[in-house]
Image (cartoon, rainbow, N blue to C red):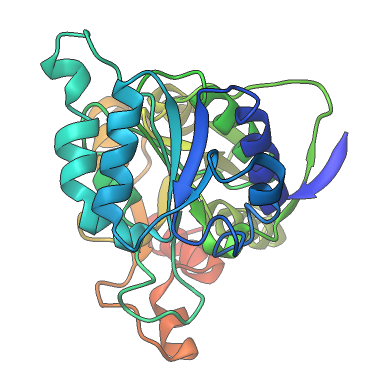
Length: 324
């Protein structure tokens, strides 16, 4: 068992992937600079310019070349500096990568991993602080990973490397320094399998990515009030583990769904509606939701912090919905 930070876990996963000669990585500043978040530092010297490719600032070209390479039998990993920039490549992601296997009746596959950085909280202003993973989770043909810990990042990436489908691998910018234990033995985490990060019988908190840590903070606050919260980390949004969520709700009878993206149109609405449809008789009250405030991210640090869910807001939502 080794302790590492999430950045190191992703770098380890990439090095393992590059053991396959069909794998190469391309993106902006990933080579000589070592990546915007230092994940690929040293990779250019280690693997050479044919495997670690710096690209022009053109996300549509980066993803388009990745799709073409995947169709040709390679297993490309492309890096988009932030998920905000993925909008420039949304046609290549949604209309090409996600569709070609279906449109060819399985004659072609697109084993493409799109690594990108999501989330706010770093004072990067309105156009660099958004969370669009929920958008991509609505697209058939894509898979979406949202790891919260080093263990999850490594295990999910290993599974992604064996998948024949295009995958959005969204790493939160504020989690790269998060520490955690990672086993020495090989392991993989299948997509669509949530993790119960903390067990409890009084209320279920469903979260993903950085909000998993906010949920754990809220659980600690609830413990001080004599309540035991169960924290369910989805780990992937497409597919998402409906069964684990419903089983937890059936046990606790109370649930709050927490996500960083805007509350309106967020993936939490999909989770909440599923719970309402399939576990209505188990609920002691309405499904609670905590999401980002429906405004563009402010540049001012205090204002930005006010738009992002906190443990205090999670606890307050439970007080208002369930009286706890």
